[in-house]
Amino acid sequence: MKTHDIYLYKSDRHKDTDFNMWLAFPGPESFALSSLGFLWMFKNIDEADNVNVEYVCTDTPMPQYRVDDLSLIGFSFTFDTDFLTIFSMLEKNNIPLRASERGDDFPLIFAGGPVVSANPAPYSDFFDFFVIGDGEDINLQVVNICKANKDKSKTEVLTMLDKLEGLYIPSLNQKKVKKLTKKLEECIYTPIISDRAFFKNTFILEVARGCANRCGFCLASYLNLPLRFMHYEDVIKTIELGLEHTDKIALLGAQLSAHPQFNKICEHIYEKVKEGRNIEMSVSSLRVDAITPEILKTLVATGQKNITLAIEAGSERLRKVINKHLEEHQIMRAVEIAVNAGLKGFKFYGMIGLPTETQEDIDEMIALAKRIKEKYKGFNISFGFSTFVPKPNTPFQWYGREGTASLEQKAAYLKKEMHKLGIDISVSSAKWDYWQAVLSRGDNTFGDFLIEVYRNGGKLGAFKSAAKKYNINADYYALENYPYNKELPWDFIDIRPGKEFLIEESKRLVG
Image (cartoon, rainbow, N blue to C red; front, side):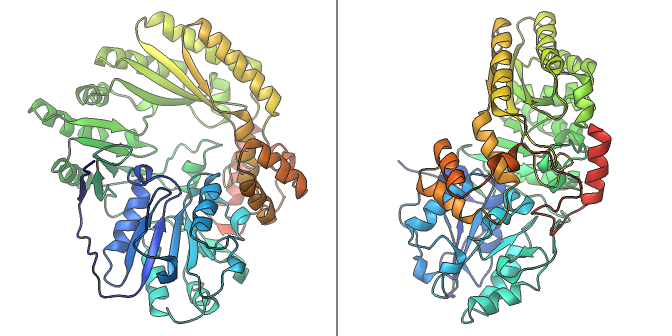
């Protein structure tokens, strides 16, 4: 089948250099081609004159460069269980899993992304170094140092890399590593538009980075502070660039609708639709209390029928505990605006098992759904729930999960009551979320455990048996509440607003 890729930059495949590297994505190419951060990193390196870079995915049939020809491999690490796919990709290419078993005849291997920026400790045996935080700029510095010192030993190169801010190098036993925060001076956008992407022929652009709401459980919010907006003029210019090549655009940002000119951005797109341009536009997320008729008018005009809104908890009490100051009248107002704009439905996102949650909080979610259903007949609502997972560098990092059996009972109760109302509902697996919590709060003793999980197939049973074999007290990592004075595996990361602030925030929210 013929495929069609559009490169929005000059990609030179015949550079006069012998420095070769892979940028590796732990998933199929279709997902890689829809991953904005991964593609932007690839573009930045690909534009450099002194490096040949190839992106490699799980379904890449035959890489252009062999491992023997590589000096550097960088892995994207976005989800806790990505280590399973990364191990598989390493073994497929006959690369030892542990960094200590890879001599100077193997390339240096590093990782970046939200999982390892928050807590790289569980994976410290497997990578030569980690990029902590925003990696757009430092990746090129890393490449240049590795290129200039291509013939030196790994230890010598790592010692040079140690001078850079934002790198964690496990073999050098660093004391503190500062998380990188980029001052955004340009719009990040999809540099390769492809019909092979999961989001086919879609031009994605980042409108905002970070979130000022600071929900107590939310890693995405705290890891990406401060909230930064792209300049309106740059957003419009970038949208126009995308529309030169496709009619499908997606606006990305954890707090999109907080952009000071977001209504104006939507109006710009709406005017193009009125002029006859057939634009399909989607948005990553919207805040319930920031929905306006102008925004929804544009979404409906560009083909959106349903959007997802995060309300997290059913009761106003629990929403205050998690720092989401959202009142019911604001939720009902958002539904009313949506109905009037011609939207067909909302999918609400929530969480169960949050600190201090009671049965009354669960019942409030059901009651809210019933009130919406009764007042706005014909408007489709559905719910998606996950279970609470404590994440590093958040105010709730000290709080363990509720027991799996209890969470499964809550999930079953929610499903039963929502189905009575004729409402579709999905709930993430409490058993899988348990192991996500173990990984999330894990430490540098996890090396053998992770390899054993991988060797036994990476299913739930593999996690359980590996923990037993290597005396990993999984409940300690997933379920226990930690004292505030406990030294945490990720404390060596210098991240703002800092641990003392998180302690005060945790006390303020939960009491």
